[in-house]
Length: 252
Image (spheres, rainbow, N blue to C red):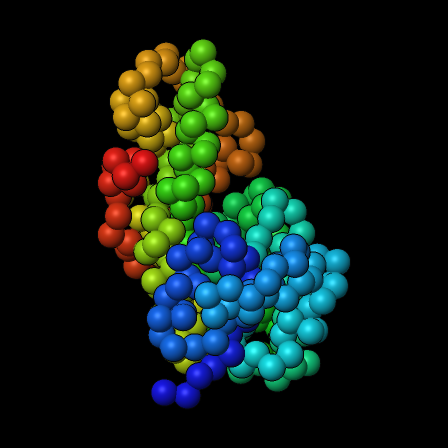
C-alpha cells in the first residue's frame, strides 16, 4: 500500500488522540498541526502554526494529500477553517475532511453558527470534501454535568436533550471517511440514545454517590424554541455509535 501524507489539525485533542493511532495503524504518514512546538514522536511529525492567525498554515499543508480538520474552539472556527481551506486549495490537497456538529444549520447560537460558517468554507474551497456532523461527545457532556453537580440546586430545563456519542465511535467513522473518497455531507453520527438533562445528571450523580435537587425552568426565546423543536438532535436517518452514556460513565 502506498503511503499517504495526512495532515491532522487538533491531533492532540480528545478526538485526535483516538484518530491518530488509527491512521498510523492504517499505514499512512501523519503530520499534526499544533500551536505548541513538539518533537517528532511515535512516527508522527509535528508542525507549529495557528489557524486563526493564519500562521504556519501553508507550511503545514505543503505535501499533504489529505487534510483532516479536527481543531475547534469556542470562537472563530469559521475564520480558522477558511484559512485552512484556502491553504489546502493552494497546495492541491485532494481530500479535505471536516468534523462539524449536529445543529450547525439550525441552532441560533454563536458556536453553531461558526460551525456552519466553517462548513461553508470547506464546501466553497474547491477541494473535494467530506463533512461529518456529530452529536456532543460523552467527554463534553461529562464535563458539563460535572460542573453542574457542584451547584447546590441543579437547573434542569425539560427541553434540553442530548444524544451523546462516544469519541471513539466518531474517530473510527472519521478514519473510514478520511481514507475513502470525498463524499460531501454524510449522514450525522449520534449516540444510541436520547437523554434529557435530568437523566444525564441522575446517571452521573448515581455513579458518584451524590444527591442534588433539581430546579425546573423554561429556556426563553429563540434558543429555547430551538431546543424544544429538537433542532440540536437528529432523530431520523443518522448513523449511530455503539457506546452508551452509561457505558462511558462506568469506564470513568
